[in-house]
Image (cartoon, rainbow, N blue to C red; front, side):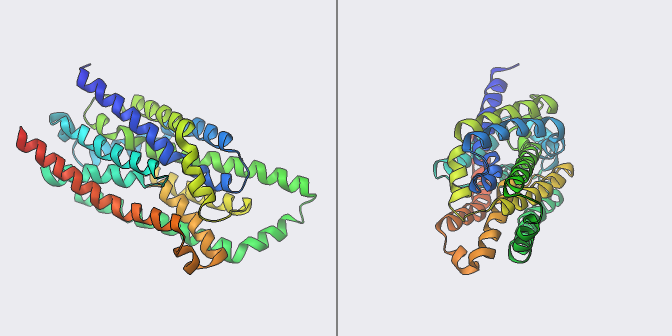
Length: 326
């Protein structure tokens, strides 16, 4: 294997670690905010189940990012485009981790590929439109489901729980349920987010999809353990107080939406979807107006809407610069 390929693999692993901190850690934020799991427990479970999700179900989205948006030939014939994707994505993720803001990592990676496709004329516009529609659908569904549950069903669920037995029995049941839902979210994150780190190198033929999924899962897990706690504080504690029932709702609905997208090969942001559920919970508790003034919400929304445009522009510019220098 050429040294340039080894460098690309190393950078991809570094990106996977940053995704593990910025994206994968956030799926446990709901349960962490509810006090059901400690920070150490949360990031450990993320590491295990993100790896499993990447290995078992990560292939479809990896193939979409490696060959679906632009031809894999683009990456293999002009290998510098692999580094452009990795540079743009890593820049965004590291910056977001530094500011402790859960950036929609998938948006940055996909838009980096789109910038290359626009310059080379290789962009699969139909596939990109399909992905953008999913980007709108996934957080919207998460928001609607969790707002309705928080506004109209939450207290009915609490009343039902009081009929199940002693307080100790109820706590034990909820603890088991929140652990299962959190692991489900981590699994879904691995199945979708692995592609963000390794899609370009798979498209270039540097490493097989199956091996890339394992590498990305390991990187995401390591990143969650080493750096994920900072994001947990922002999402789990900074937006609103989350009860354990709300946490189960946020995790289970978000994980289901993301896993369906993974099976269809659509790269979407689990981070955005879970955080939308948390914002919906805040709206149900304290209202839309007060939630909109929350500094954490404002910063998160700025990254969500600003990152895709900047990523496309930066990727397009770097591609044009490199092609003109050749």
